[in-house]
Image 1 (cartoon, rainbow, N blue to C red):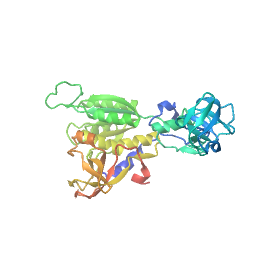
Image 2: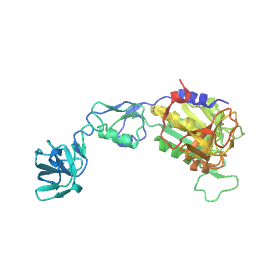
Image 3: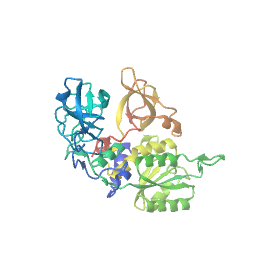
Image 4: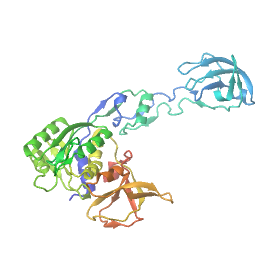
Length: 412
């Protein structure tokens, strides 16, 4: 069996980054920047009001109440035509440019407006409710680095700075299929003996779509060598990566590994981890191939440890692996000392403020409900035969954005 870290290193070394393209910002969610984003102008580009109210000179309202003459009304999207001079104010809406001469804004709730004058009921020191130009970002500042993935907030940053077509790594195309004569579609009304509904394709497809890749669904392929051979060849021609579930163990009908040797190459097919030991990696006609086990939890764990980092690397992302934190395990567990073991856990907070982790359900590789309920994977390293309740354990936070680079996880 190949050690987990060695297997991760081999996978990342074998997959190549895809080319960079410009895409509309509205279509760039989840993609990784191929160049930095720097401020082309101050953000905000001009001093503006943070409130609906009245732009004033702070010294005019230092002793309140005081009545000021209103010169004009400036809604958002307009610009002032008058300058605020002593004894005057300008009515202003949120986001409108601050008039010349004004250095504070009194919110409308603290005033009594009249026809052409306003009673200011409280004072407002200089700077009150004013957003200075460049308060968020000054011109020339690098805001986002190459390799950062575009989250919704980062898309907003790009749009606000005029990056309407950011340069990003291309969205990978990933072909998926479930294998095995026992697999039937989820809309099968009545299960016949020996049959199970296909969960893997939907667990995997959902994870891929959430990641931001384009999924090509090749459906269910039975235990027929000719059919599987043809489907693998079609998938390799259509996609940047091919992913199957099932068929990579030692059984007589586990065809994927044998066909992989025929159609391309097998780099490795067993990893010292649990679940997901029977994980195959290689190539089909030059296209990277990920042969995931058949059990649904194994599929999800293999996706997190191999496929997700590899696809992020192909997309040009800098951070490839989920964050890990330390917590206190509340359950006693026995584990296989020859493997890195991943436990499905719920994360909470103890009375002392430290994170806690409790098993989210039974830990069999077929128990998908425990994964659905989990916040994290507790990582038990090789050489550990078990952990007592109260032990410190590392928690891989599977609901959080990636925070660790390849260098941090597997070294150079």
